[in-house]
Image 1 (tube, one colour):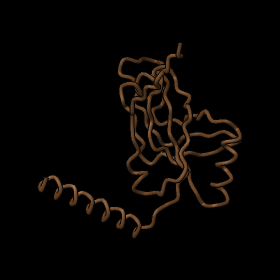
Image 2 (cartoon, rainbow, N blue to C red):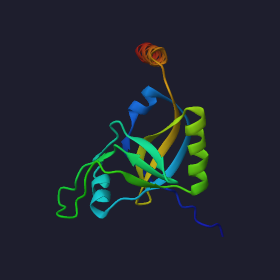
Image 3 (cartoon, rainbow, N blue to C red):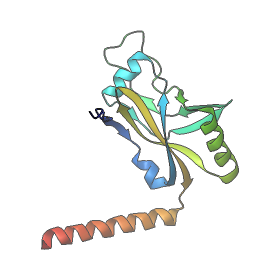
Amino acid sequence: MKAAVTEKKEKNVAVNRRARHDYFLEEYLECGIALTGTEIKSVRDGRVQFNDSYISIYKGEAWIKGMHISPYKFGSIFNVDPDRDRKLLIHKYEISKYFDKVRLKGYTLVPTRMYLKDGRAKLEIALARGKDLYDKRETEKLRDASREMQKALKFRG
């Protein structure tokens, strides 16, 4: 008898589209995030914004700064500051590996998306290298060209 295969259900809560526009994303890492009770309820409602958020490593721990989680509308005194720094749950060896790349090679760590996986909030972060203005223009040109091709194929076919 075969063992039942359990599929992991993921539900996107927020996606950082600006990260793809401003950076070359190279390596991805899934990590947990330490939230309070009312924060996780807001996350489940999809009330998360990544405006200018980034990952900082301080005293061997990873923290996300600048991420906004709106206060839970039915919360009371238990609501916390929506823009507070939140601790990321990553293994020490992973933190040291990424910290070395950030410090020595000029990379940065940016959040790319937040999702719920089996009821737990997960954050996908990426090791990123900044794009120059001409790189951004080139990306936009390629995207517009592919859009035009898709339009032509749709119209023709």
